[in-house]
Length: 277
Length: 110
Image (cartoon, rainbow over all chains, first blue to last red; front, side, top):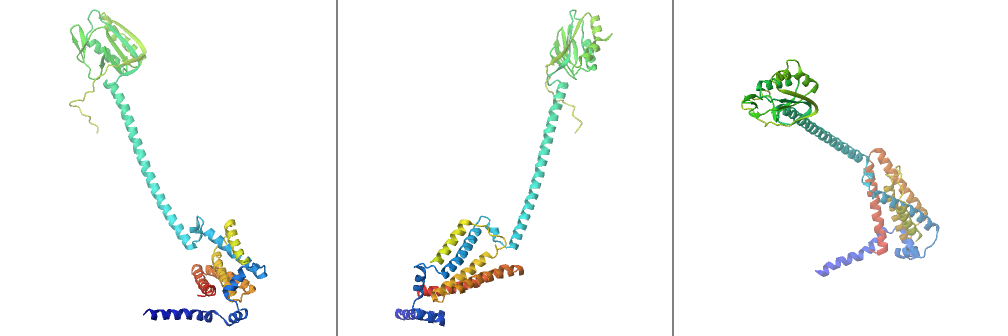
């Protein structure tokens, strides 16, 4: 078997060299080979080694220089960073450009959506912030009226000295009414804040404000416009004259800074409910 | 020998200088290079066959380059540049292979 296998191979090998010259060798070449009696390999070596400067060599060198130059330039430009697009054909470039445009458009849309969302969020948070600020402000203002926060500002201090014990609750109430009518914004009497629900009662020789017994001298600290408050008390037949008729002494001092720091606890009404909202 | 030196010097010069390829010749350069390669292989084979003639080589080299570029140019104008370039490359590739086969038989006798 092995012999049989080998023989065709050997035959092929023997045949090939015979066939090749027959295939490639044209009559001219055959005759040339016979003439010079040189093989191709010998000619190659001859052409290569002793370097001869001949016209043919120089011309071929020039052409090969051009070839090598072009080859290197092409390879270099092809392996540049942006060579992916450089070698692309026009249709491909147009397609790539279209895709990029689409992508840009999509991203632009997305960006606009996100910016809109961001603006909305900012607006809503701004509105919430504004509402919170207003609420705090309102709470402060209402707190002054309700007596839950301390207040300070210009106003007057009225001291009623009652040595005879003749001052009664209704006189003090008249004084408070007069002060309110003159624009008093925060009032405290001997450390008790006067608010909307304040009541005054007589208790023996002295007076109770909201159940807190206070003794003379009664010191009213009032925040309001002093130029309004003092004349309101001093008008003829007014609070001061009525009190002096009862032989109590009244002194009124204007001041740029009155501090009303008596506080009320916040009390949730049991029955009354806000009807708004 | 000087011819081989010319090729080497050309490659080195191309790599060192790195010129910008003008946009006009850019599509034709690759095909021209392949055509020139074909001419060079043909010339090498002719040399091994002992029938090398420098005049024939110069003419075939230049005409190969010009014709290849012309075909690509024409293909671009007709709108079939890509296909025609491929065709040219295939034809030249076949010729290069057959020439390389002849050279191989001369050099290695196989």
